[in-house]
Length: 112
Image (cartoon, rainbow, N blue to C red):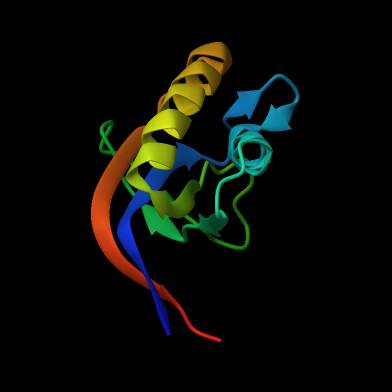
């Protein structure tokens, strides 16, 4: 097991409907992460959430046009996360979306 020292996890919470140009914002964030040489990125779609507006968002079969939560998660060094946050700020400003970002120290390892 190879432990990665000084790792951080960056989570970007956005809505499914948020767009950057004609692409979903979460896809654009992942594309930019790949271009920036980040270690990797994962997008998770939420089934139930509420946020600053106190509106419940739920995945139900007969509802259309729901803005479900999308979480983009990246783990890398603090330096790379700090640099990527600048890219995220630019994408969010350009999109006009509203996102929440969290960053925390993590203990990570690669197991082969």
